[in-house]
Length: 492
Image 1: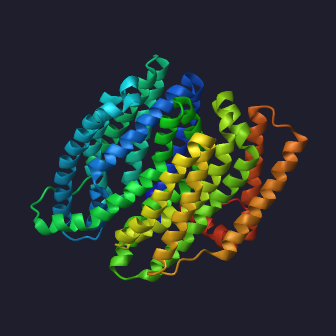
Image 2: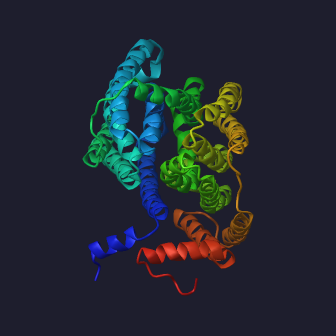
Image 3: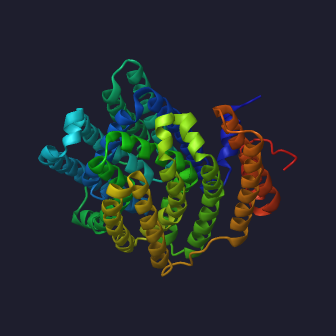
């Protein structure tokens, strides 16, 4: 008989990093699946133009929300996670965040005459509301995350996505179109804030100038680094919107979303490891940081490599059957964006380590160079090559950022991959590719079920080959799965 209390006790006996990684990974996997299914529904229902207008709204929200955060969110997580004066740092951060949302909304109103597509689509009022709600959610979320409650943080993200998508689906069915998409976005933010608030154990407390100064010292460089990451995430979207149409934005962002499955392991590990590495850095336990980073590379590539290989073989068919014929024109961009996701693994984890080790200044320096290159390349390539040009610009600058961040991080720790494990991953992916190519020759990919069969077969072959060739990965997964009370197949 299944006993929740006994199962929970078994889960709690698992190593803390592994346990939080599993919670984070499960949440990220659920969010990815939900996001994919909802986007498929929206793509077939409202088409690329309305979907593109929504993605443009999200891009502008991210820009103005960054102004409203000012880098203080990352600074608050860093200082709170260090375990000293937690209530004072939380209170100082909350006050600064409220002040900055006023600044952010003011900037938005000043820039309103230049945001033609936002005003014409009617999403500007929703954007202002989203920024205000985000201030509350951001304060609570960073407080919970700084306290190391990664599982609660991930549950909040799950609630955000479930609420957002649920309201969006209902609104689309009722015919609200773009307003339904933006309204659901705001509702999801609010729901996440309420969930995290329930588990917030920090209190408002007196603080002094030194707490503000400490947050400023970290936030300045974090803000600039976050701005760089934002450029990678949304500069292409905004520039496609400027040079091209909303439909082109929709096609490009759908292709980008399809490739994002390659990095959901990385996102989970990033969320879990940041407070841990921050603590290890404070204790000068750099050996633990090196081991964790190397293992994070391995487990990130474990998913990314087969996704890239499979995406190259099946990408156009997946776009056609999952999102609709109009989205299959994004296959060229998708082929390039798959490699972007591999480069982003190294960039994402290495810059996370720089920030966690209290080196945000170095993180900004490497990001600033790549950001400048990204903007220039987008301006040069999008007018000529369209969304393929945007993908090329993103790939070039992501590789540059990964190389520079590795160089900077190497001054503090030894940055390495695990060659044996990575070699086994590549070998398993090559076997998978061979099997899928043979499958596609024997059974033409003419309908969605045949394509799904190719995906399932490729995934199964990859997993079997990897577990048979890499004893280390197999033993770790076996220990973790059996620790969760799930039987391990005898054939493996």
